Image (cartoon, helix red, strand yellow):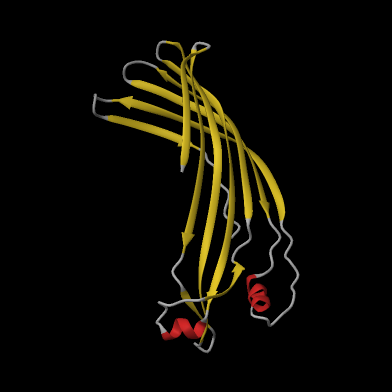
Length: 210
């Protein structure tokens, strides 16, 4: 992961904080046998999932008056997901107990997809008195989800093994949606080391198409 941050404590009477980042993640799963209905091992393979994500966040913090804090800004991020399944020579893998594996072909595992998020937000906190602090905010978020065309996993295996020559792709597509999300809370300062609070918050997330 790479992250860069910039701050300016005197930007038009506010504190400016900007951040950009990039993250990549690769998950490789241990090779595992495929067993059919007759309990016969038909394949030995392992899967890999790769995620690339980049984004930015910009916030402005201010104190219009004593006991009142305001934070507002925007953020954006983009995520790309891909995956594959690597198949190994079954005879060689079986003879070595899965320790000596030779790749024979690779197929796609799940549909690849892209998720883009854009959002603006406003958050505020006000010290009612020495005992209570009131917090609240609103966030508007736009999300777009694009899924690539995909040939079924079983059909890809048939083609890779030479048992078929072609297959129709399952069409992908895209969908977008937006939401207003709210939060509110009341914090009670009992002592310097003790607090009690009551919070309400909303969130939204996209399920992975895989």
